[in-house]
Image (tube, rainbow over all chains, first blue to last red):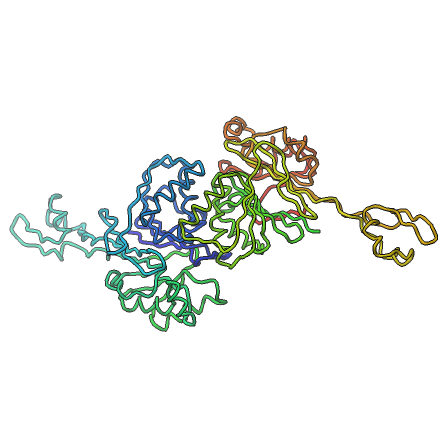
Length: 303
Length: 303
């Protein structure tokens, strides 16, 4: 089961020659969930060879340009490529009207259905579910309404050991029960313990995306024990005050969140372009948390 | 005197991993005139190290997304960088309202003045003038209103030979007259021919930008004898009919326009992504015109 994150853009506010604006894509077993859509996202998707047709769901954290100005171009491109499949967009309420109006003004009539899902600005809530994955959103603390996202695989069924099926003559109808943890009783009445019959399933993975927010201890419970936490790290410690007033976090605050929420790994990004060296973000975060990675455009992380 | 064109994007409709959407910048003696603004233009400007503050004028050929979706991001970035200088935008009438509305919805209040100049959809007309340069626009033939642009340096004054000033004791007040072609009469009444006094000025340069149009012989007079003609070349000859119905040109039509308008050089771009090889565009254009160049992102042309 794949659970792989690709960074499409990692700069904050302004792009640089190396870093596009915020966008990421999470590959859950060849379904691609797009998270934020800064200008140039479609170009990065191409560079990273992400199959456009496998993007069915787009999650937009908030309506600042650097997280969403890539959307009109991406939707136009989907259209030009002949898309007919529905596309689901999870965003704050006004995006629907903004996009319809804007695309209409540019003579773009989409040949596919856009289905908007409005984010809850107050509560932790489930916004997506299928048989193997759930996605939740939760409010952050920025200058405008902004939400984080939690991607969580559902608990997986155990795998049955192939050889036991013939050994104990197990009928097909029993297999799902056994995968769900049941023991098996043979025709002779012998009880075969589930432990003997099954192999533990691969662990269910989780990923939390937290961008454009002040340090917010309230969210630690919502994102508890994720395998990887992406947390914005716009500023260095010397600009702690600026982080506070602009609704952003420092590298140290990102690492504190990883620590108090019990994350296994921390990924930082959304770096301000004001600093000479990106390494300082890493250095400062490592003072608070041991396992820190830097977001870089085109980089992938197997979670 | 610099007169240098940089290609920022050269793909049509869809970007590829190598080619962004249409945008070019013309450097006229360190003033940078931006022509069209496809998604990602601000990223390409950075990569090409174009100084943002020296862009005072943006020309938008028409309101299709692939020529203008980079504008919201570029304006936001100008704003974040603290721009205060006026910015002039030459475009079709409705762009002003579209941009104001869109940026407003994304909480972008610009700290500088945007001055919109409406393009004439019927006539060849001068839209910009300063002491050394004129810019003209002229209607093309596309699915929606679309204009081409002609950048033309004004005739330059002759240069006076330094040594003649002392030889003939020429007073300062005479110098401008001489540079404009006048002879000089010495105190002794001797007439010194202007030819003796001056060196011919560098030739005035011209560049025409013709995108998103059917082959349109009507414009040949407007762009007569330019030093370089950029002409869109979306399709190959085999798709001549498709070019007609979609309001585009083939490589051969682009080259014919260079030929009948007396252009010195032809630059082709806006290539459809449907073909396996870009070289065929060049090959086909060369059958009609001898001096053809291919637009490539990041490439510069000294005109």
